[in-house]
Image (cartoon, rainbow, N blue to C red; front, top):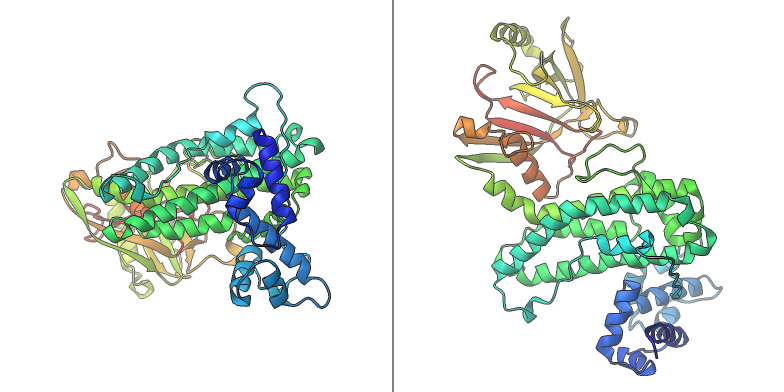
Length: 494
């Protein structure tokens, strides 16, 4: 029996016995292979485990059964091999997003029986080849490895670094494929569903599960950055169609419920989003589901390797304070730097801050002299950095003649989803001490030492930087503009 027959027969057996107790060895006996070989083959081809497939099918059929008149939850739970109504309800809610008592036909998730449909048309077919281009890692059970906890964790960190440098381009290839009309003819729809839903989304979920288990085993060593678990949770939610990005919830739900909607070019555009380049930071006209997945993938990796990088970047200086701040509404008032990178003339700065000194009744409580920088809510690839000397004052502070201002609100408002001001008055605040030249070193950093380290700590803690639409930073001069800056503000969304 070849592998196609093996898997096809196994699916048939599962479907015929879906409401009975099914053991893996019973299925493997039906297809004349060992249990371990069968499970490996099943996972490699379909991207999910046998157990996940059985669970997904049972919960799909259970929802359909509950829609029938007179159906009882406890009867359906028992029919699909759940020991208690409580365990069934928990599994049902995780899968469908609502409890069985509130089942609705238009909201249930449908997991269809898997089918093998192979089309070979020349070498290196893009739609299949790029699946394996992601930098996957099969995390083994650490009990089977003769490695110290330090070595095990470092291996994960090394994988994360390589994946971060590699995966953005593969996500861009995925975007291109989804937008290629020639790849989405009716005869390719079934195969494309397997590629996207099983080959990519389910495989990422499987990798996340293995990563979580691997990290949990070495967590007692104290080496694991706990923020990575939050990042994995969010990634899993997005992979399951439970997005935090409300603007895409409808289209994502429609794709998960009925993949045939992908025939519609407009639907695919919202799923695909735009290409963001090798670093994942380029601007896009349409922010789509693939962009969300790319962001989640990055957040898992950042949580793994950024803490170590931020620590190593502190040479001849150190961070003495790091905290997240939520300020009331504020207004930044100041003047743009002559060259966008300061400093300006001593006479000009003295006059600027002298005027602000006369406005003491408008102090915000965050009264440092700062060099505020932003890109007007656009990506760094399309808008240069603009720098402004000034201070954060109370909201609605009158603006002196010749000055400019930018407003900040305590949180993102529904009317403030447009890029640029008003910005959000939430930020990370880092205070540095040590060698001044080292603190302001630029060589070997993306921008400079204070910027890079502050940003990397934020990324390592899985805190959201609202880039690019509400992104801003500021150098802080605790002892006045006439002394060196020794602190940094970096926009976050808490």
